[in-house]
Image 1 (tube, rainbow, N blue to C red):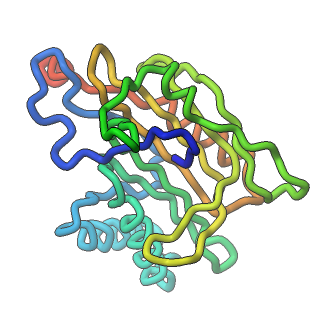
Image 2 (image 1 turned 45 degrees about the horizontal axis):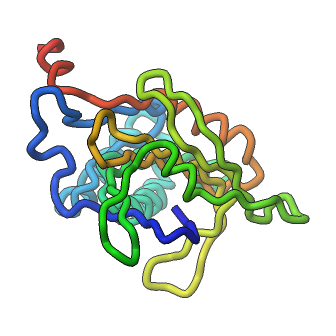
Length: 235
């Protein structure tokens, strides 16, 4: 999340749900289309998870066999990006269209917001989040960066702060950047919990801006917090 305000996200250095009491949030849940790839983002197992997911997809769709290595490579790159920050979920779309990969990704991370100067944790209520998100006016060209900021209501998680538009994303350890359609939805944890869930969805397919934003909105609308009572009910 780019901003010029002296607030920044602070990735958590441990399990974001560790030490949760009986009534606290112990996880998150989000649904993506069945054709998407979902994989473990742990560094020790992510590559194997991706290879197995792609191999299973090739069994279902043999016409993808000639693109298997390309699919694996594309998903590995998505996984590397997902490992930045405290990502607790990662899902990716990777289809071959006219011989080229069409990709999109959704991640959910859990962070706290801190003041850059003092290092003090600040409230993550909706008013605070909306106060640090900066709109960007559209440029002359359709693919120029722009950003809209608004409040959205998620069916199972309540009100959240959202940015959506076209953004330039810096490549880690590189001087280059790339341009994507991006939607970020910041969901305050319930109660007095100072954490915030950040749902990030992006795709480099700039020509599909509107349908991709609609898809990202649909996926994000399934987000919910998971409580221990939910697991007790399921068991």
